[in-house]
Amino acid sequence: MKPSIGYRFLKRFFDICASGLALIVLFPVWLIVIIGIEVSDPGPVFYYAKRVTKDNRVFKMYKFRSMRVDRNANEKSLRPDQDRIFPFGRFIRATKLDELPQLLNVFLGDMTVVGPRPAAIDQIPITRGGENAIVAQLKAGLTSPSALYDYLYGDTIEDEAEYMEKVAPTRLALDRYYVGMQKTGYDIKLIWYTVLCIFGTVFHRPQVKILKELIEAVDGDKRALEEVVGVLT
Image 1: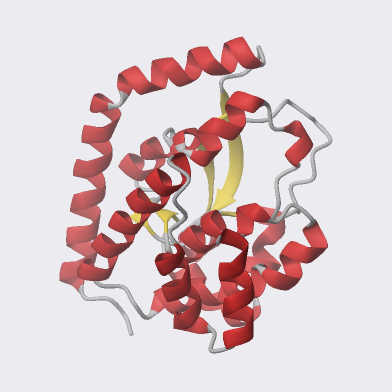
Image 2 (image 1 turned 90 degrees about the vertical axis):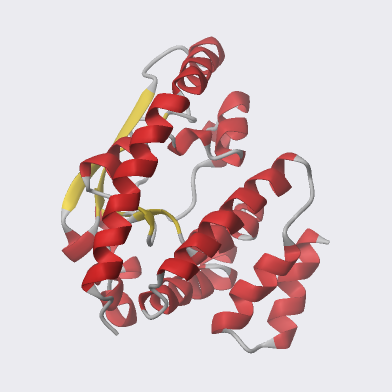
């Protein structure tokens, strides 16, 4: 179902207001993160990557660098090279501070606050191909059902093969699920869930209920659900 004009207008209005205000209010946090990166691993502060948004349009996505520079890094992988993440980088990843620069992408209109995560060009066949071609109808976002699932469960699995077997199918299904769930109320709920998940990670209180809700939305396999939840409890 195509979202209404009113929903799209309200969503863009919210994106501009929220990202603009956040860029101003969080400026001191930016300075702290920049200093932390330079002290931990001197080099570029920002990480720039070509990603795709609505209609598979390519744009430049901004992030704070959390990994040691490697010109031979594999962009095709859905998993980060864990060995390259420096300690402060792990902290800003866990708290999502590494994604603060994407507020610029939201303000400029390349991204939205709630939407499927931007995909690397080499990942288009996986994340925007086949059944997931409908996901290309949406603008890439900061948070989404699949992003929360990946944050709560996907980040606990480092092995690439295991990730593709246990995490990727549900992650992709959640992107498709969101296509039919585009409503203001649901977007607000996801923003609130994102806040809860970040604080849950910081204070070591995994948001198991949120994880269960996400899995149950697209997967009725109780054994799989118990296995996933068991990782966090």
